[in-house]
Image (tube, rainbow, N blue to C red; front, side, top):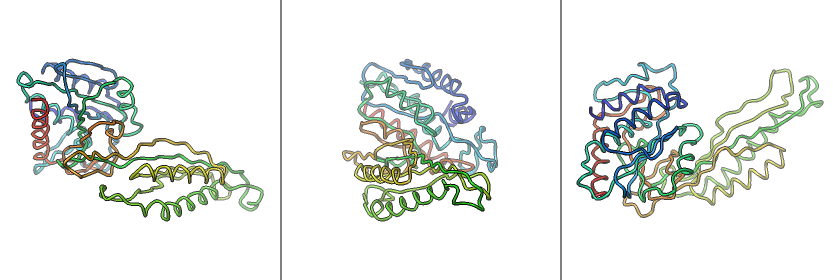
Amino acid sequence: MNVKDILRNLVRFNTVKDRENAEIMNYIEQILKAKGFRTDYKGKYLIMSIKDQYNLGFLGHTDTVEASDNWKTNPFEMQENNGNLYGLGVCDMKGGIAAMMEAVLQVDFGKLRKGIKLYFTYDEEIGFSGIKDVIKQEKDFPDTMIFGEPTNNESMVGSKGLMEYEISFKGMKAHSSTPDKGKSAIRDAIGFMNELQEFYEVDIKKEQNPNFEIPYTTMNIGKIQGGSAINSVPDFCEFLVDFRTIDTKSEEKIVQEIEVLKEKYRADVQNLNRLSAFFNPSAISKKTCNFITEASFLKKNCLILGAGPVTAHEDNEYIQEKSLYRLVQQYRELIEKMCG
């Protein structure tokens, strides 16, 4: 069995919203146990280790996003074409998990002074429940943690923060011919959004951090819903907005502004997620990624390193075969260097 065989088997598990969570965890555990790893914890997430001392760990999430109807092949059967490997999750991030597993299978831990710990999580694509549960369980993470998110084989030492909000408004329904008898929740939502957008352009976007490819905090209103009919004043509206932040200073400004607008428009504000940006200044690399990873939850020496190209969440997701083999080599070299 080689890394392509492992990846092909991982892709076969339908882990959209963790549907076959138990099955994929059993598969990973079985292979690693045969190598001599012990199971430290197994539930919806899995922790395994080898040897009693370790300063290096690897982490990968097993869930994937859903496949759209635009896929040209069966997303749960890995396909090979012109050096590319296609399948749901091959990039994000079953390719990283397969490379971790193959790398440890190639390493002779009997010749190394220290071992490693491996963490396999769930629910990364929606709510980060997996990494949150791992943190509750694990009190002593290795000093260096490798995350197998796709980076096209480039080492990334930081990522932006994330702030997600659900903001809703209540109005009063009335017929559209007599709108003054009602109160439009959509109109309040538009006012809130316009003021928030103006605040973002004037006070947030101008602040920059050159460590990031997109050097400023971004804002995106991703979903709006409200109203029931064209001839009714809407009594409800809500929208979802996220910010990818560059520092805690920007975070605090956003929190304060949303609180002001909440009171002005009498909105209900739900904070869905808040993660601060992180950057590892001690690393040789200075590259960062714009997307959020589970590394943001750990206060450790974190490195994000995975296969490529980065086609996460795309139709007909793929990675290059040579990138996958290169990743196995990179992981193996890290293990032998840090554990020898």
